[in-house]
Length: 431
Image 1 (cartoon, rainbow, N blue to C red):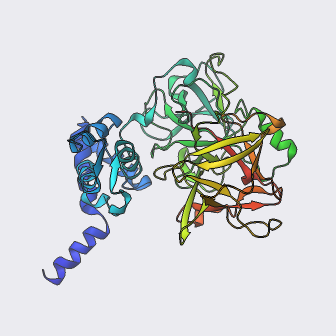
Image 2: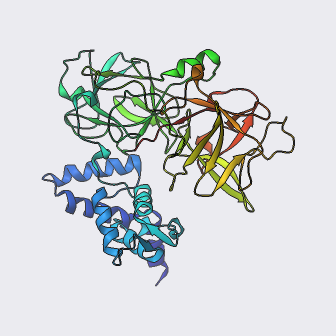
Image 3: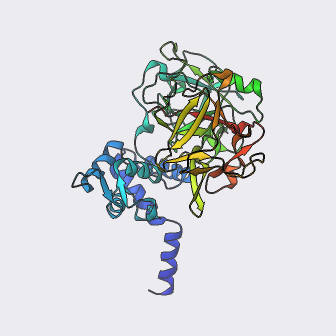
């Protein structure tokens, strides 16, 4: 191969030209649009905004592909089989950059989770059957008007506040934290939002958005206001925990920015069918615990030899950790990781110092954890709580909150003397 051919090949690979054309060709074959030119323009605009993370498979199709490789019906496939299956599903050979994402044995659930992270699935934004209580209006606080998609493109149109407004200003909003949509939305919950008329998501990357309040400080009064934690008519911001940016409106277009942008979610119909109070957490079940402010999941890392220490990781991590909350007495608990068979412990020699790390240990714990809910309520789904070390009164927190400058989207969990916004935790996942 001469120099010019080598240079051209390098250029094509660096700029992912082959992947681009394979993606476009596959998309055309799958969708078979009547207006190919318009379809290609839309696809290129999406790739310009959100990159190459694209795919064309529904959840049931993922199951079918897994079954094709699981010929013995063992419920798992080998790492090599998983890699081969991934390549079958990928629009391009270049989408699998790291084969280590697959363990030696891959279950159907693990396969679906890995595919879901590395290939964006064609699943209509994961929306469940739409009911009247799922339909909302979304108001821009800044513009004091309702927002809706134009009938021709992805630009926004604005309308005065009117419950009987045209269909393009109606949005389907459903919780990604519960299969059955039985409960009113709360802060700290992940939701999926799709335009009712256009049948397209509000965010073209289709990831669940975190419903978040924005309060830089927290005190006992603010904490107790979290007792019902309902969105209601309060202003909220929509955060993408994949890129740690907020949904914004700039020049009549939706985009992501570092600064928050406030929206108001207005129910289209009476919400009497939706319950306010969520179920209490069962002490014998395992839950995903996440940081209320960041939306990151409680997890762990083991970079220090064999020591495992607590971290929080962003929403798209594979194999989200689950935790068991053992109640010993009134609001006193052990935190236990069933998969690792380890307790969460403060192993610091000096209990009076703020701890840089909280570890997982197989040993019987020497310290317990106090879970404090607003107004001393019982622990329930969707209610923020504090986790306090009973040995020194310090609160479980994170050491920093600057995900924009952290490529790993992973932050260490620490103990701090004072309560901060990032001291709040929540159990939400109800699927």
